[in-house]
Length: 256
Image (spheres, rainbow, N blue to C red):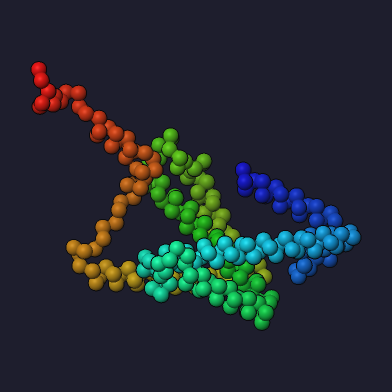
């Protein structure tokens, strides 16, 4: 419901702007809503919109910085990020400093190469978002194939597995079509290269860990069915059944 409301609000706003301002006069440096309000003599409203947008951007940057810092600390604690990013405090100071430095670097590059950096960040961010959703949907598809899902459970996806196939094929089609859009090819190439680099580093690290660790000390991965039983409630039913005493069993200390 939230997604439908946001889409309806976005489409309605675009439709109103198209009726108030010609598309030939729109430029990338200014907001179309601000241009439309200024054209119809409401420049003060355009200034107010800019203030609201800047405040929203700063709020989003603050939330993103803190979320990225916590993610870096979690990765460092699991050995998937440099150890110097570990922080024992409640607030991940090191991750905040690292993400803040990366944002300042991006801001500096934006001043040096404004058009190229913006298109690169948009295309690379779009690929990262599509790839993340592709992995999530592929993982769900794999999990549903290995683990049965009862009709009463909350792991149901309408139209499975056809909806999963449509979603996976659609995201692949969007990623493949990115080079045909002006300015999107560079971000796609960098995104694919970064994905291959991280996958290679993870594979080499896992292989070294398996070779160096003795067979008796290697961690045994938890089977996927255990997580499924927690979600579907099969384990709870089993444990409840095990806790029910057998009616045929007679306690030894029971008096006749």
